[in-house]
Image: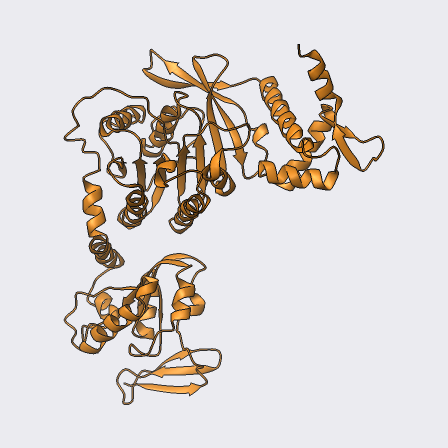
Length: 504
């Protein structure tokens, strides 16, 4: 007849008596900033709702959403707490009651917290005593999916201008563009782990576009189809999560052609709905990044996740690839998005690498943050392209097989040609480490083991155990050797003297 519920904290308890007067009773010390649900929040998440009461927090949590509340809708929400939460959540949304008090309070709080990007979501309820909050919304028979649709509509309104502009950039397969002259295009390739960046680099005409297309094809192909992904294994996209391709360099016609070819490779007669391809050449550089950020957010909710994001030409998101501040900001934002949406963002950078390093501030920052960097180059056999690892987060890039692919006239597409012999891999490892040794010992004549290990880690962006294996390899090949005068130091080895002596 008189139910009572206790919201228990470390040093307090708040009693809720829905059918009694007064409805709330308090015991213990609540401190200055009472916040229910804060301790239960995950380290990172997509959306956090701020509701009017504990019952609403529990209702949202029961349906799989993150939520908190303060002591009432009229209290001042601490800005410092909201600021800290912005680092953990993409969206912070006010979800107050739909009565007069709730509407006025949410409007006031939205203005006070505007600098943190806090928005408010209005429920489709009349605001009566029986139908005013999220608990009433679920009680009326609405499901988690219904609330998600409501949230997607909220995002549509929030990003309406951007999405209207982006819609005109989406490839329309029912109305293909007029045929135009073909041009050489650079490609996009998705590879890596969830929550990380993946980089593809190389010069023009090396086959990057075809390599990228093969990976995208692996993300959208039917589960039982055998697709040639040019030596890369792709996890099946069984849940049909979004696969997003943003091109900043190629024309609409060329992008349409490339996507049509990858659909043929994927054995898909029609474009799957989860594949979205956008030509961003008509946007300014600032608009491009903004369009990518907001559309990713929308498609993440619409398709229940993002399998892969490909940005073909990340240098076109900044004014200059040698601007350090811009480069750091763009790579940081992409890395943040990969973590929030638990996806792999593949970045194509049209720079020719210098050995194991990428050029420019943008290349350096991408190499520092990405889990994997692959370089696609022409092989000694000019009809073939070779895929080389410049960086792998776990292990040595010089131990990764050299993969080959080439055009097959009969198949009408590029096909996998296997790995280069082990001897070729060893020669490459030797050449790269010789260049690194020349660079290090060009600045000093001798170096200790510890300093050499640290410099290898810094120059090549590798872990300590990989650096130690490189030192062992260089000693075996006589690239470096112990200093006869000081056995605790290394000097340049006789390998360089032999090579110099053989040069005309």
